[in-house]
Length: 195
Image (cartoon, rainbow, N blue to C red):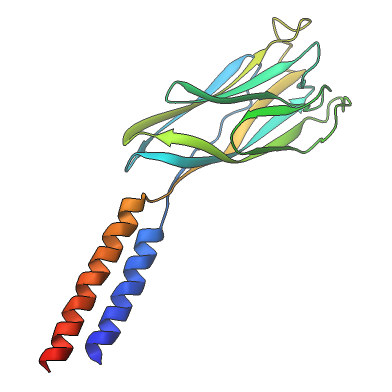
């Protein structure tokens, strides 16, 4: 009976340990002009081709979506572009994200909301992590036909906040857990037969 309780406790503990995901959290950027890049570097415990990135993009004043003053936002992981978009964060224009995951704009319309700024909440953006050193670069660039040089910091600026990467345990982790449980079960069966 004591062995069964010990086995159950070990199973629960190992299942909880195996299911834990590693998380890496960015300190967030200062308020930046357009154009500008915010880079975040961190070390991952293990490689993970299916990690996810969640973050909030905040625009100040009149950052534009897709219009003649368009401002384009890009995300790169380990120097590989994983998505880009343009968002109405006070300056008007339509919003769109071309990458994995979802991007929800607090403004929700293409009408200019001058000086309002706004936020875009990104969820489950797929990232491929290396074991060891990784970098994520968030960048804003002026791209519209009337906006090639960008606008002043007082008119348009942005920041990234609450950025978190979540790495999910690989299937091999669960396979090892199940194999260990199988061995413990075999030992328990032998002890029962011997008694």
